[in-house]
Image 1 (spheres, one colour):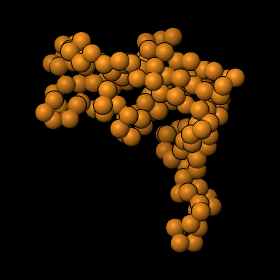
Image 2 (cartoon, rainbow, N blue to C red; image 1 turned 90 degrees about the vertical axis):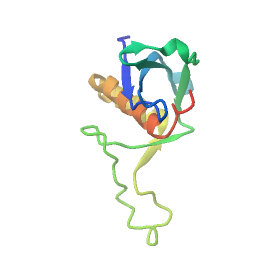
Image 3 (cartoon, rainbow, N blue to C red; image 1 turned 180 degrees about the horizontal axis):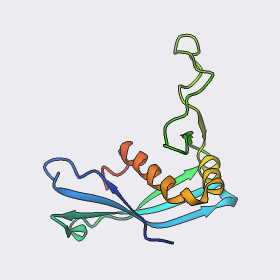
Length: 138
């Protein structure tokens, strides 16, 4: 596996001068369980100097399975795909604004259909997890 590192925004004040990068330690596809397991570590640096040891954090595990849903994305720009059945909350209250799919089926399907984009798909997925606060307390 190629060395995959994804930049994420700096830490929040008062440590906003500490840069963070997510390092993908492991990627496991488990088709029989319909699961993808990503093991990640966050690397920290300040003024270009690695200070990861000062944080002493355990690796973080991201599980992608069909018990969760993910938003479907336009593969060209990773934008959300609108649900054509959604009109508005009042007219179609049971419809979601964006299309969703079972996590494992959708992401593994993208990886199989677009193997040249695996690293981009992982980058975007890690950034989405960051935006959801997944890396805030590690």
